[in-house]
Length: 248
Image (cartoon, rainbow, N blue to C red; front, side, top):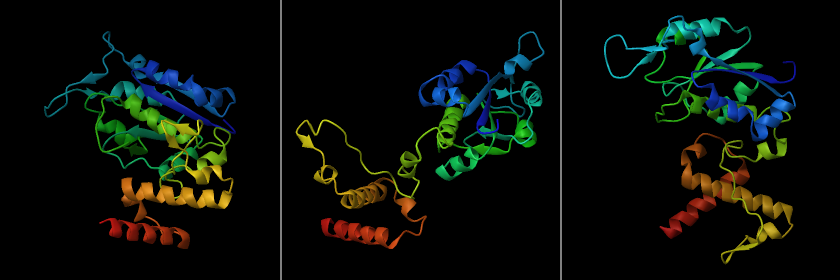
């Protein structure tokens, strides 16, 4: 695609993936030609009458391992020139917003959905460019993990979501996003913060920045150690520290 991204997913359960591409914002991106997708059921590349895709692990142990042959045949059937092949796996580095932007710059990404105990290592060694973890936990469905990666990436493409919305999201500036409010103005006796009703754009900006920093300090203090912030942000952080000391 000249002006979009192609996403290819290799999976034993294409029906799990298909609905995502046919719904909501993704469906609009596909209709506009910003996304082209291809679903490959690698069970179709088996050669035995039982269409076997997994087998017992060498060396023993619980569970089953996805076989190399059908996956290799499926990958060999694709044009992988210029493609980036991803394997969602708890063994990979964590998926971050920075990594999402890196993947969003690719013209073609290919995702291999794991199952059971994993994939024969020889597939990873020969074909996979990046193993990527969506978090420090284990799930049974590589399809779900692949959808997390896809959703984190495609929304960053030009024309999918407005750039204004992306700029203020969590992690974009190194802090979490500020709280949001909408109508009604009063809900269960709780009102909207008055600054948001003031129409004073600079005061609203400062309030949002402070609230975003409060949330980051409370929920993800590790993020605050990763960046060199502006003088304004550093002043707010000092003020928050002083407030904590007084409460303590």
